[in-house]
Image (tube, rainbow, N blue to C red; front, side):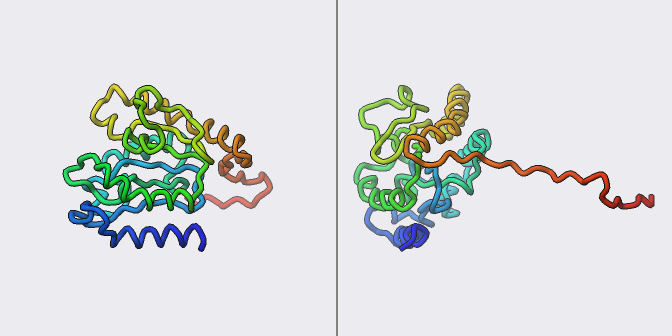
Length: 215
């Protein structure tokens, strides 16, 4: 089974999952979006109101800010995989409960295994706690650390900047480091460092026939 097929299978299973109480208020499950060969995987906390309506991650206000952060890092949504630690919206946007996190972890682990990203970026303290226990996000945000076969970077959730404007410069600074961290991770994991090729506007040679201006 290819990575694409595995992700599709997981999405199908998530859509009908009844393993925890979160399915009771589910409109649409939110398995995650992105290519199966993504080098960077973002893991948020849980779907919100808009995500529950549309079935896609980070489509509300925090999603718009995430798009800005990705653009600053010269990355597009089409290049990364975005998921959450739970695939259904917790009622009232409350934090996922320990049993809900444990139940849904099988889907997230299967996604990580299929995608095999070089870097996982956790967004928020809850997703951070999957990889780092007993630490405060304020102490480790933006710091890349090796965890198993890949690197993990804990970052503040984009929504944090919407609630606490003082955090916005910190979040912007953390995302600004992402391109260099990806290069570092690639090198350490033995993957080729690939430079992005920007498209150039083709110049018209001097001897090319020119269109006559009739007006």
